[in-house]
Image (cartoon, rainbow, N blue to C red; front, side, top):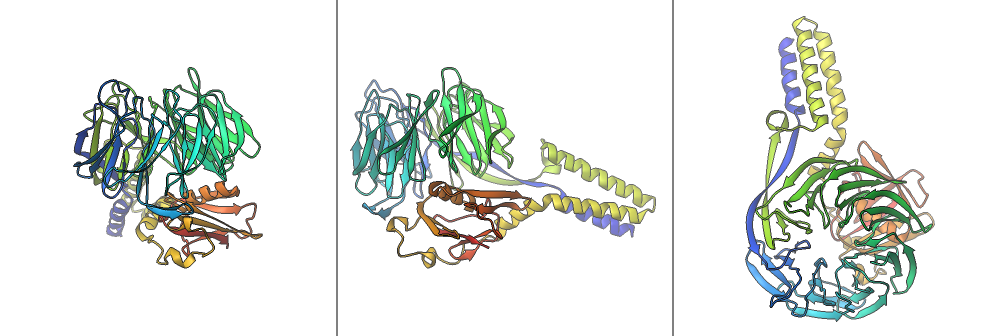
Length: 554
């Protein structure tokens, strides 16, 4: 009997000693792209990685866009000969496609401080088309966005919409002066901030629909949360974090934060903001509330690496990239500093592509790192423990010690009872992680191709994009042309926001599930991807770049 108990204790240790997957990055190559700075994130596709230089140009040098292979071999350079101001507009890669205004090849879109907006061939850097905009001290410095077969560009004085196929302007509207001001879409409205304290709403047909007075400058794209917008507004010596309800046209203050805010991040319903005081995370449900904060100094872009690890450039002389895991409750964990040989001032986010990580900062060196996956048994080899993990290890140790003491006193029934009860408790605590692990192992792409769900009446511009269908009791509502989403939840949120459909979710021990759409709950909602019923929580169920997601009553 005692041998059986010892055998069971061994199995208990084998299965319940915690493991973790740790990603380390080793230098692969570097390229000096100076004399300018790297102020915005590199981007990459299957063939190349692209980076742009910025600076205040007084000599013969001028800003450039450069392409390298993933092994670091230079391929081409495109120079803007008339730009002399800082180029801060992020690069934007667009895959080949077609729409109402025609067909276009793969494009690399570049906004310039001299007011030009250019589309380049990613393969060789040659010009496809070019559009000119107004310059007042500088031209285009903000982040553009793709909307179906158009690109929407914040200009120095307003907003323009351009056909991807031809470069023809659909509209250009004058608002007020902007600087690094990105654009977001909610429903049929584009939202963009300015340097004059205004948040502008512009209908997709080019007419001004609304204007909201803010307390300062808005230098990022508004973050869309259903019928609300999150706005990190820069003021004289601090910043204000607002939530704007586009339905009731009401503006509410969430918090007063540090000065010089950066470009925020979004992961489902959690948002991360950076400024001169540090990082702040916000969780949005019925209300948007502060979840956590982390002291540092971040005034530029940030990025998620390996899912939920934040990389934020530290804009100080010592520099580096602050990294932290963003957990399910919006708290920061595993906080570290990622250092390179060229640490210093920086505002550029890293870019992750496959097993590579590309970084750059004001030093003007593009650095490539390669991921090395290692698995460590935390209970034996880890030098630092998460607080809850440490409590778990202590609890297991106490249980085993107590069982051994009972067995030594021939109290075998009590020993077995204690072990069984402890195993049950641990199994229940591990249930969400086990569910997610099985999802990662067993989830396969739907075997049905998207064409089987395709409706011939849908616009051709929706081909090879993500399409969402809501089968509501009163009508069926469809939206396509969506791109870039990796989970059912992210895709559903975006579609519901643009269609102004209210959705309600419930966070359970097994993950996130949708309980109500437009006020209808009935017996619940289920989703299907390309006609195949989904089996996993919406926040972990992966989606491909081309699919039809259909929501219907269970």
